[in-house]
Every structure is written in C-alpha cells, then in structure tokens.
Length: 632
Ligand SMILES: [Zn+2]
Image (cartoon, rainbow, N blue to C red; front, side, top):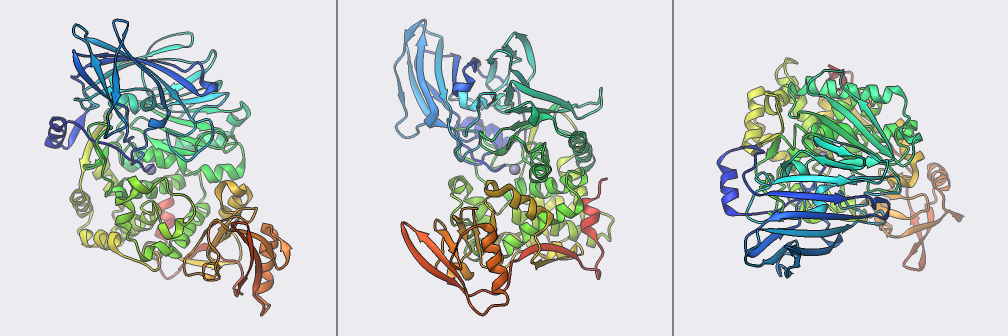
C-alpha cells in the first residue's frame, strides 16, 4: 500500500545511516503489553503496558507514521482512557503542546516502572482509512498493534522488546506471523519480539476463520492463507482459488529467487463492514475486502490483484526500502519520493504475478492494463503535475476525496508506474534480444540470500545502477524523463513496444462488465470517462469529471447529480440508451442536473457513442506482453 511515517533521536538516526542494512535486534527496555479484545464486537479494546522507567519525566509516543501507510495515519483521535500509575499511585501526565502523539508522564522518586492503561475506541462506521479504519464486526477483528500501544522516547523500534498477550472473545480463532509461546483458552501469549516486528505482525481473529496451507508440507519457508469472514459461507471458495494462491507463492519464488521471511501469512478479512485496503508486512499482509469476494465469479476478478501486490511488498518495500522512507521509529516523518519504486514496481510485479499465478486470464490482465492506460491517457492532472510530485506529496494528500481525483491525481505513482515499469521491461528485452528481462533485475535487486526479515535500503542511484547491471542503457535519463514529464497523454510506449495497441470501442470488456455489475462499490456504475469525461454512481451522483472534456465544458462537476436524461428519470440504462441514440441524432443529449438544491438543464453536444478501452494485437511487433504474463 501507500503510507506515511515519523522521526526520532539523533543518535538512532546516525546509527541507522551508518549502514544500509538493518537487522532487527534489541538492546533497549523490554515492555510487557497485554491487550483485552474480548469486547471486539463493541469495537473497544483495552491495553495495559508495563514500561521500565526512571524518576523524572517519561516521554511516550503513540505510533504516528505507520509503515506501509506512507503518512501520519496513527488513529490518535481514537486513543482514550489513558491512565498512568506507579506502585498503584496515579501519575500526572500532559500531552506535548507541539505534537499530539507525544505524552509526558511524571515518575516519582523510587519508581522504576510505569503501568500505562489505554483504550482504543475504534471506528464504529466505515470511513476512509487504512489500519485506522473500521476493523471489528460482530464476528471478526484485525489487531493492528500500533493502535494499542505506547513506546518510550529515546530508542529506535528495533531496540525495544515487546512481550505481547491477547485475550480474544470466547471461541474465536486467530492467524498471525507472530510466534505463539503459550495459549490457555482465549488467552494467547506471543514470543517477545522487537517493537518493529510486533507492529509488523497483525493478528486476524474471528468466529469464522479458515487456514489454507499454500506450500507443501515440510517446505521451508512455509506460507499460508488465514481468512476471517462475517459468515462461514464466505470462506467456501472453489478449490481453484486456493490453487491460484499456491501458484502465486511458487511464481514469486521463481521471480525473485529468494524469500525474506521465515513463515508467511496472507491475512485476508472478508466483510462489508470493515475498511477495504491491503497493508504489507515482512511476513504477512493485512488485506480486507467485501464479504463475498471469493465465492462470486465477478468478485474473484475484482479482488485478484490484491494479495499479489501485498505479497510482492515483502521483497519490494519491506526488504528493499527507500533509505529516506526507512525511519527508526514511528515519530519521525517519512519521505516518499521513491514510492515510484516502492509502490510503482510493486503494482507492475503484482499484476504480472496475478497473471502468472492464473488468478486472472491473460485477456483479463490486458483488460486491467487497458483501463489503467485509458484512465491515464485522459488524466487532466498530468498537465499541471508530474509523476514525481504525486509521490512527494502523498503524506499530505492520500486521504483526498474522490471528487476532483482526475485533476488532482493523488496517487498516480501506482498506475502510471505500471506503464513505466512495463516500458523498462520491454527496453531490457529489446536491448538484450530477449536474453534478459525485468525478472533479472528482481533477482539482482530483491533476491539472494534468503533469510529472516531485514531491511536493505536503496537510493535513486542504486535503482539506476541495478538496471545498468542488467543491461547498459540511459536509465538515469529514462527515469528522470518519466518522473518529470507532463501530459497530455499517458506513457504508452511500453504497451506499444510489447506488441499491443490501446483502442476504444463501444463494447465493455469482461472486466468492465464485472465492475458494472459490482455497481456503486467501485464508483463506476456509469463510466463515461473516455467519452464525455464523467463517472457517476447508479443514482446519477457525479463522482468526478475530466477537465477539458465535454461534460466539464458544459458546466458539470463532481458533487452534482444527473436527475434526468432526455426528459426521462436517470438510470444507467437510460444514460446508455441516450448515448447510443445521440450517435445518429444531430440533437445534443439533454440532462437535468441538480446542484446544491437547484436544477439546471445541461446540453452535451456529443455523438461519439460509448467508449471502452481494449488492447489489440499489433502484428508488426513480437508479443512480449503474453510472454511477460506467462507462468515461469
Ligand atoms: Zn502497495
């Protein structure tokens, strides 16, 4: 995923910068953390920490910059019930006046431990957000440890040891990459780990929980899929689903040639009532999607890329990480300028592995690529904003609303970099006459030796040098141009060099049809993005318009609502009929649009019919894309 972070003690930063390798080993204080999640359906969680302390002021942080979220997203507004004691006496505390995530506690003479109690009053409705979003229902809960703890100032998260325990609602099961040291009934004790690895080890829990092994018995390292759902029925996916995820683990091993975990857990939550996202960790991923995604055919198409993307992050993002993004704790801000590698390359490789694992057919994979290319080819925001700025700006922009997304283009370092990394892959294949590919870069940059989680940082120069080791080329010039270039138009040279062309016709692709049937959940019930330049829900509510296209020029903008089309009440079908009829009529399409309680007639002088993107074969060139998508 994309995300955000924070800053700390100079001494820790200096140590960190001395080496580009960080191995998680601790020499700081040991903290005991016990979390009571037995009230999970009420969405309130109780934590107690025993923190070594000295008399004087003890400064504690609530995690602010959360790894993988690329911003200061720690849910400080939901931190409640704070109380500090020593030897049973209540201690005075005050929040820092410059940083609301920092707390100062007065420790009396003679005390060497502070007991901190806190409650995490978690969201009770689905709002935008990642691990700060809704995580608990009547039947399941995902434990994000960073929401449930404080940590002492003066140490990097690698230096602090946390011994965590967790109490679950009676009868609930769980899955996690953390090692269990003991369990009695619903009380689980985990083996002590660094704070880094605790925050890196979320726990999925629920009444309905299924474990699917993804590696053969005895294979090292093992991988498994742990699923929690709001119903038992949602876990009964056809066998082919598990087979595709087994292929994913196999194909990723072939792609990278090494693994940087000791035991990998895909943690997949299936609920209509939790925030939907994926968040990467070294040895797991916390992915959350709609309840019936795996048991419905359309749902499987729409969820296909989620787990491959998050799994790729174990190599690209967690093991190899931009040096200025790899901060020693959760208080120091993260710099996001290299997200075009962290997220962009992950998006490309995730899509490649989605195809190689068989989760999507080559045709559906091409449909997805065509959509991405078409969206970017119409991206009005490309005119004012280069790709580098989309990465640089994300800590302050990623919670931006859907309205004006096309003009704002908040996170294009995901999709536009799929096109750019495809282009790089094609260049390597062309320059080496097919002898090498981006797979060779992955083996070099992300590969051997295998081992437990660690961080090996990189800079822009390291990426350029790595590519030059695969094949000599002006990679510095290539990426500088890709990152600073302005539109209009998307970078399509990768698609074209791979033997395919982006075209439009009136027929929705298989993927378009699946999204249409999914309705408002994907916000594309009416996807007129490439024709008149608007996207609307099934009720006519306009989510976004494209600056410079027909709808925007006619005076339509996000937040308005199409009430009627050619005199008839709006529905997606009425809209499509009008688009079809306008092809052979000289009259404009006449809309009644509601805006802030006023109604207005708007005329769209458009006669080009519906437009949907596809990739078609260019027989004058070799078909590299099919080779890229083929299982190895
Ligand atoms: Zn990601």
